[in-house]
Length: 437
Ligand SMILES: Nc1ncnc2c1ncn2[C@@H]1O[C@H](COP(=O)(O)OP(=O)(O)OP(=O)(O)O)[C@@H](O)[C@H]1O
Image 1 (cartoon, rainbow, N blue to C red):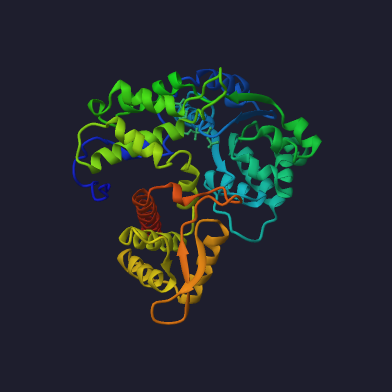
Image 2: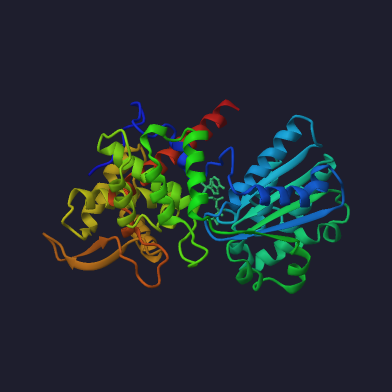
């Protein structure tokens, strides 16, 4: 079985809009999350209406894929739209994902950049930066709605404690700043993360906690159909009720038995990969065997792997792509040797118009990937010379949260290619912007 990767130019048989099946896409409607949206708007109403000198905090808690980010971003989008139309006073909306912005400084720099400020990487302490950014917002007589996603990461660091402190005490810490601040803080493991924070910070932070329960099968069916019918991500005729039920039953949470994951991201991914497989086999419809294949190949629950992979630096991705291509070429082999990998990597770099790194740097990157648990190495016999390093994708070592082996190689190849292309083209756009300035 092979997926067709060159299918972008041709009309697709099943997938109409790939973007709408990606994890970052925020859909127009969020079935089964009306309550959480209403509750957030209620808590934030003073800030949204432009009242100064208020701090409103709301905490979202729930497992992966339960719609926390989607709800927060939807609210951010609506508030921004309303402000742009003049229906509410101007408000700055900033979305910060702590996976990407891990320190206090980086978080304030991101908020600054969402205000249109160009902040140098050096020269400011984070306290000065906070004053500068909040001062700027308040001088413009704006309020701010800040969404802090994946806050578990911040909570576990000393820096995070200080960051939450600044937020929770804006008025005391920055007395000259006059603004209304709304804070949506998103946690996966609320209790565990709060345990890392100082008590004082927790008590001033803990505004309202909104829970996001895992989705049941029925809820997931509604979510999947909305992606198909309302969003037009997939041709409706390509999917039957049975297929949707099958996916939703596999992923859905059962409150009676307390089993099942209830993760919408995973349900959408199973649908997407099943559609890719059906397209790869040149069919017009998704069949139960596609779903079974995707589920049995262990795509469940490996989306973590996908995000871990797409967030890697460029050359790590190029290197992983080289290894994947080799393993695909020689399917009977479990290991490939370092020499082959280097040649393939140079070839991949050339295809993408990227200058390959030197051997020692490649070696360092292999070690880095190994440390992350993404590849495994062992010493083996080279064909011509003495000993050589052999590389493979590990299974699921006990100490690893990722297991690349769970993603079928052809899917991994597609994920890597797409991500590299996206990164290079956005880099191209940035360069274009610089040139036109
Ligand atoms: N109620 C919903 N309706 C439609 N799509 C949804 C809904 N809930 C979640 N999704 C989709 O599922 C995916 C995961 O959702 P989201 O990123 O909001 O989850 P999360 O709770 O923030 O997870 P994580 O903790 O992993 O970040 C996204 O693609 C999102 O669009």
